[in-house]
Image (tube, rainbow over all chains, first blue to last red; front, top):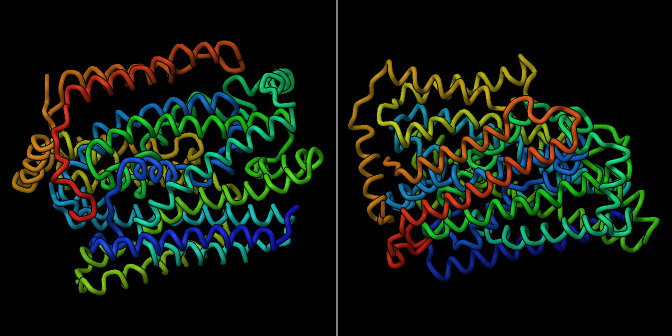
Length: 510
Length: 76
């Protein structure tokens, strides 16, 4: 379809854009003498909303998502709509409190574990959490590299070697984050987010025109006749059972939209004021629903056009439709759409990978090097050390991506599942004064063991994800807290900070 | 951390609607129209409850003017 030259030119143009954003942000910060460093930032609400959405979407939008709708049908989309709505309420009860406490502490938090340490005052907990959040980062960054390399491979009919694409994309991604850090990633996300949402809907409309003359009704009627299972549970592949209809969205509501480390810091640390946090709660679910609906329509149109794709091929339904239907309709349009698919996948993937890479390096430098091994890096060398860490982590993810599992979906969902047990610890930490650090450590360990068992012992990972680990962590948190004690002075400062933050930011009128 | 009555009501209503959507066995497998009706009866109220509740809770938690004390990166 596309020549390797076309792909590399598209790639080069896109990378020039990213590097110029990094350069612009770095120069601007130098002029303003801002001292946020590579790993911290605070941004106005439009950038907050877009960086949150862009980092959340990941390669899901162009790969795993359409494939999942193809296999799971409309019931799968409905289950996603059920959890997308929950973000404002979860954010209000957790992340907005996290934001306020961080502000009261001078905006000094870098990693999610910083917040947990503030409440439980346990260095051991900080180290364990740092390792878990780090473990969640690698599969996710790798999934992005896998997806982009697959896109390049497929778009060129194999002319661009998969491994070559992984290495080139991985290196450029690492250089971009090394230069610009988190602020440039957030700024680039704003443009990338708008770009991929636009490209996504362009692909939806183009496929609809090519396949069904622009009539969604015709596509739905075809599917209703040929594959009615699309419109009922458990879906065309029998995958959306009652259990997974709960397990999957629950995993997403907690793990994906709150607990993954890169979204945790965005939802909890990045907003420049509480109004920005509230705008995020108002707008994020609506934007997510818009993107998810477009992704679902691609799966719907794809299944209406061809119903016998293998599981792995379903994740490549967009390039499949371009290669098999659009090209006969209009070859120029097909070329344009393939470039749009590649650039869209690149934009959405890199925004997530950059976010993950930044937070992962923060975890290593802050949670591990600084607070676990007590190595004090001089302030003037902090950026250099962070850049070295980013480079090492980027190369590590690159190595995983060279030999990936069959489904990108699997890598993404495992990352989400492994952080789910940390949510009850956050909630109990905020709302229950009797919660102890011993309980937090025990709940973390039990929860992670249960998630690993769900995947590798009971083989229920594709249905329950991290839900069993989350429930196990909840019970452990309560039971161990009741049987252990922690010096009240440890949590007193935390709750005093909460009270001060409430008085500083709110005028409660009830 | 204090939780107001409005927040409690919001939490309870949204949780109930989310549980209603996930009620096991409803709708039956391989039934198309019941799936759509079930979704309309549970998901639309769920979204409405989230946004209406958010609006009401935010009215209770009126924001103080902190414009002069929060200036982004300068604080970091």
